[in-house]
Length: 77
Image (cartoon, rainbow, N blue to C red; front, side, top):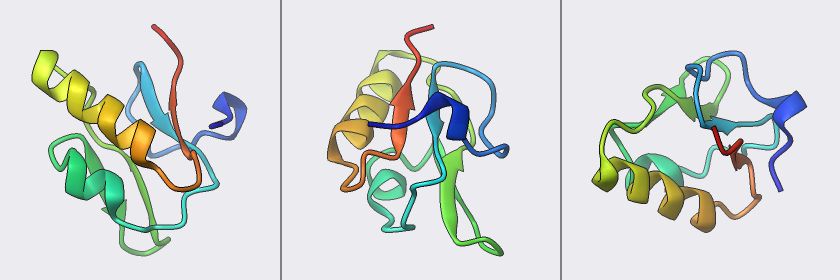
């Protein structure tokens, strides 16, 4: 389960976030490419854009559920 206190500083403010357990597997970027990006220098993903519609919201939830290390969180706000 993702830890809100360990979220990465690159995440844009909002409901979804990635924490420091990310292993850079590319699953979230493949699932929701408009919402997740890769920090090339540090080698991990982060939320670059919060969902703006139901489709993006569902893709972000799919990414959260598919994360192999549970590094994606949803703070419910």
